[in-house]
Structure formats: structure tokens, C-alpha cells
Image (cartoon, rainbow, N blue to C red; front, side, top):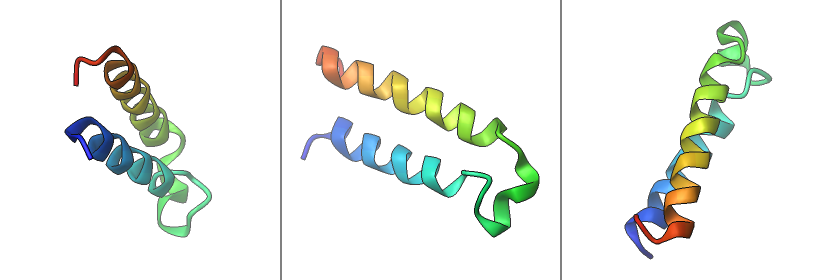
Length: 52
């Protein structure tokens, strides 16, 4: 596994954990999941371009 793949997996797991349907994150709103979603998209683009 490359570093980019491991980073992408970790970011996806963080994104799933920040979804507001979980009990501990209901008060957070959509901010954390939106920010992590953006990070996942950026890392995915970098992995596909071969830069990471």
C-alpha cells in the first residue's frame, strides 16, 4: 500500500465518524463532515494524478 492509499482510507474513516447521525456528533452539524469530505476529494485527486 502506498502512503496515498493509507491516507485516503484514514480520511474516509474520519468522514464516516463525523457524520451527524452518530450520537456523539449530532451537535456538530455538517461542518466537520463537509471539511473532511473536501480533504478526501483533494487527496483522491492527488492520488489519481500520481502526486501523492
